[in-house]
Length: 159
Image 1 (tube, rainbow, N blue to C red):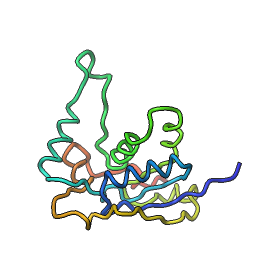
Image 2 (image 1 turned 180 degrees about the horizontal axis):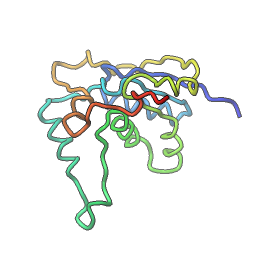
Image 3 (image 1 turned 90 degrees about the horizontal axis):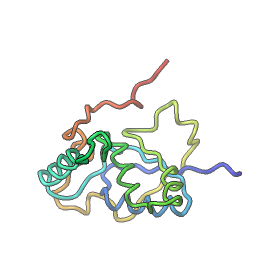
Image 4 (image 1 turned 120 degrees about the horizontal axis):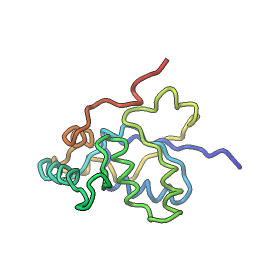
């Protein structure tokens, strides 16, 4: 089996919906993608409305047993990855494609760089936040508002 080649995408100033839908298409076609700077991707819309939407989403629980979920992430990397999963089909093909996406809050940690080798840098068309008017908020801001401490496991280097 041939070793897969990874493609690297910088999510800084990319619109969340456009980014996720195009990443979902690419992984369904068999590409392996690593996304960096997840906290800098943006969600279009009014800041207060967006924050209210995600705060309300965090408070959703089942009536029978709240410990059974649904669970929503407050870390930017898993937040972005969950949004990509929502755009994939809910079957084996979608699950296999989902495993081909790796997301990091900042850059790829030194301990994981050897896994990706020298990834080819790709760009997503028509996903730049410069297309938006002034109404947008970054994923980092949303996640901070819903409970993320601003710290990341992959920022810590273990000896």
